[in-house]
Amino acid sequence: MAEIPKTMKALVKRDENESYSYEDMPVPQPSGDEVLIKVDSVSICGSDINLYKWNDVARVIATIPFVPGHECAGTVVKCGPDADIPIGAKVGVENHYFCGECLQCKYEDRGICPIMGQFGHGKKTEYGGCSEYTIVPAKYLYVMKRNLSPDEIAMLEPLGVAHNAIERLEVKNEDVLVIGCGPVGLLAQCCVKALGGKRVIAADIDESRLQLAKKLGADVLVNSVKENLKDFVYKFTEGVGMGRICECSGASPVVNAAFSMLRKGGHIVMVGLPKSPLHVENVLPDIVFKALTLKTVHGRRVYHTWVEIERLVADGIIDVNPVITHKFAMSQFEEAFQALFSGKACKIVVDPSK
Image 1 (tube, rainbow, N blue to C red):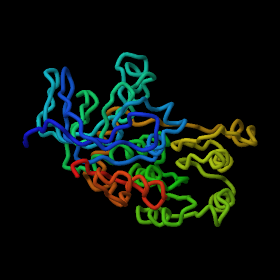
Image 2 (cartoon, rainbow, N blue to C red):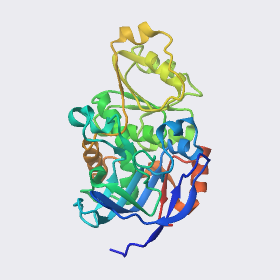
Image 3 (cartoon, helix red, strand yellow):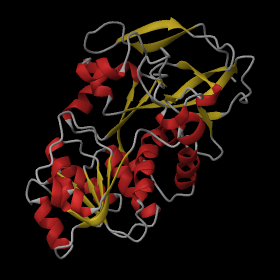
Image 4 (tube, rainbow, N blue to C red):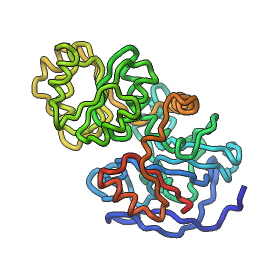
């Protein structure tokens, strides 16, 4: 193992301005149950747009100062006295810092702890993955059991969100409509096939994203600019409606309309993040009388999801690499974010060592 330097490069949000500073800072020293990891790869999430621009959403989900980057893969290089992860272990970061003491943590799901901190957001930790080294308490690290690349490990975080959604949707032997072909929507399509779904119907307004969906195994493509999605659904299902819908667009009008596309007794899971109020026009026929099942997700099921997705990627059942369309050195972070803003990039990974 190479000698640990005294200083490192990192992106830091220090004030309520757009962008980040790219600066030298001391390599942190782990104490207690903390682990110092050398960051091998970090991927940029669509939610990072809010943090970069520091908009109203960012003020809710983040606290200054912080290092961004919550989709992180690394190698353990040093442990505090109460941490026992082997030096050299490859790890992924569970960025939802659960408390371990509340009702959800003890009896339900640590991934939805109501008082969680969040790695890469300044919530109970200033650290994130956009730095050459970072500190993570041992209980928030998933130690890899299989041989995955750093980029694949970083992609387990968004894949975990998609897997959680599709697992909750109960897709076995069902056709599934996935609305929105961003990174999580594309990964959700992969999870549908991995978990026994029949056909995947991918819907989006961007033709290039639809072609990527086809490459990843979508059976039917719907460009909802060129074709009315509801009309297509009822034609495709012979007037019955979809049994399973995974909503990943986060566009409020689309979310509102999705309930009208669901068959009676159908299931819908919301993954996308609407930024305006939802308003369902026909509540009785589209919701109450449908006896539908609505589920939502926030992250992964800790650590059940990590075990499942590591296996799926390691066994070649899911290939996350086609979703990665751009790679940048961390020193090129401005170009990376501009590629994200342009809509031309799907998933961007960053190398903090460059």
